[in-house]
Image 1 (tube, rainbow, N blue to C red):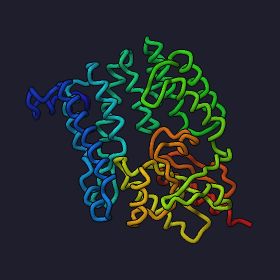
Image 2 (image 1 turned 180 degrees about the vertical axis):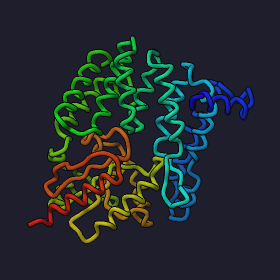
Image 3 (image 1 turned 45 degrees about the vertical axis):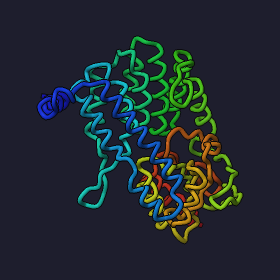
Image 4 (image 1 turned 120 degrees about the horizontal axis):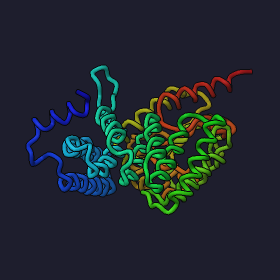
Length: 361
């Protein structure tokens, strides 16, 4: 008996019939989460002291709890098309949720459930006309393992619109595999297919054509070895500065927001990296999309120690075509791009390697 059948059987025993396979209840849970997040963000903006801010942070809505409720609704019915839309929501909000381990580390909270959703898409839905939200949600997971699924959707789904969106997703996922000529050719081929087949399809952050244009911009100007765009803005104190002010230093350029579910983990990883390379020609520069008042509070109470551009409307992030937060670029002393992707061990290893290069005679 495979994993999906075991899970479905277990849930059918544990959950009452009224709690199983309810599209309406699934929609209610998702809307409740959205409302809770909106109210919490308003409270965060109104918190004026370190104490009130700490109290408000502690009241952040528990996304994991809402995700578990949605999972309970859709898990028994993963073979049905109605689950695809809530499955896309689940894939977007859960990948960066982490659970602490007894050893002091962390592990993805919903790794098994995400894997089950990927298998369900492959088993039941490759030819569904309702896959467009799922294609973009698979990209949002940041998991390179979703690339084969997107390629299967692109090659087997009978709807050209779905094919085009899957091709766009595949092009976006290929970025994590490197920039060798063959990979670049595949990316360009998929982008071309996306534009031809589904240019007018509206997605969360624009049409397929607009996102494809961003992907082409990234290939031309934001790949490894290119000189990263200079940024010109203001910090939390309202002082003007530029990225080029830090010429000669290795820069960890962090695009982030305190409103994301994994904000505490982002702050922890960045602070640890800043401490590790203290005393070396290394600097962290953030590009924060929170309101200026929120950024000032984070800086004033010592939650963050690195300098940040204030970017509440995303003007600076757009210069780097940032699609999701967090995203980091590791730049060498000449502002050449040496790494782009997730914050974590790869960014840290690249920083260490570039700093070692600078020390060589």
